[in-house]
Amino acid sequence: MSTIFSKIISGDIPAFKVAENDDFMAFLDINPLRMGHTLVIPKQEIDYFFDITPDDLAKLMEFTSSVAKAIKLVFPCKKIGMTVIGLEVPHAHIHLVPMDGIADMNFSGPKLNPSMEELDEAAKRIRVAIAAK
Image (cartoon, rainbow, N blue to C red; front, side, top):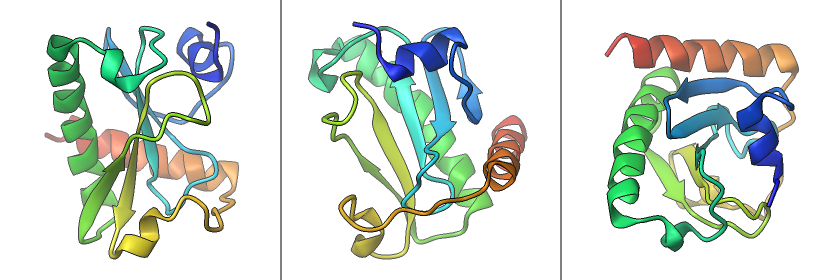
């Protein structure tokens, strides 16, 4: 199963990466609900989120937590919302979205269309916040 996320992991498709280790990667959604909207994925190709082993889920949550905390520093908000939908790409992934209200997590609503420069700057700021911890 080669997905768009697998192609991002391999470097065949560029992405605005904010964090990466041997097992996981986080990168900005290019059509975000709000600026800072980030996707977190396991590098292993797994379609269904709950097929991830319990040990790997724990590691994924630790990785995701560090990314979420950095996003909140860069994009002040009440909370970072987290959701797993998994219908649009058959590769397990988490959406992290800065939110001030439940409407900020409306995936059927309009998306932002930031410039490549805006996405690049947002990714840099989140990477700096992660590195500062």
